[in-house]
Length: 186
Ligand SMILES: [Ca+2]
Ligand SMILES: [Ca+2]
View 1: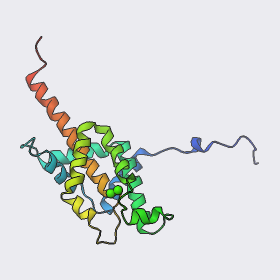
View 2: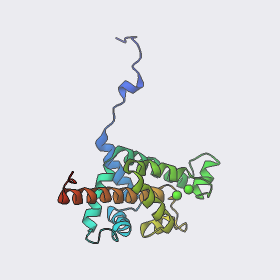
View 3: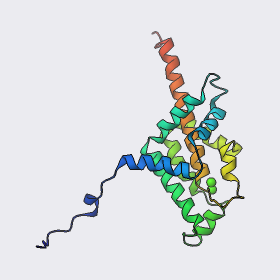
View 4: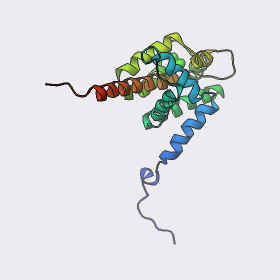
């Protein structure tokens, strides 16, 4: 028999599966042609002169740690989704044209990427600006407007992940140094 109680609030029915968010983030990055090792090359580019013994493996571990954060996953999924919708011509005008053509005055892609960098403090921010200006490695590929794909959001997101991993490395290396030297004597 049908009961006519209070309708269940939508928010009560919704329950997020964090595991799916994390795995989809990795899947979508791969589907858009970005690998962890390509991001690791960017981290190397940013950090090698400060830490000559830094390895690609270490960079990859730090990237994995960055990618495990929900703030980061949310930004990756949102940005890639908008890129894909733009590619399929599914956005409303004039947003469609702005994202599709990577309009110079459209800065929401950079702002979304900052939500990644913000988790890791000011070193992340400096590095983000730096790779955005020089566009090394995979960033150059993503910025190449020749292909069919639209990466208006993804280039900033990848730069932000690399910048955040760099910041994480810098903080950890400092902690390692302090552990060896020990706390300052009074
Ligand atoms: Ca932009
Ligand atoms: Ca962009």
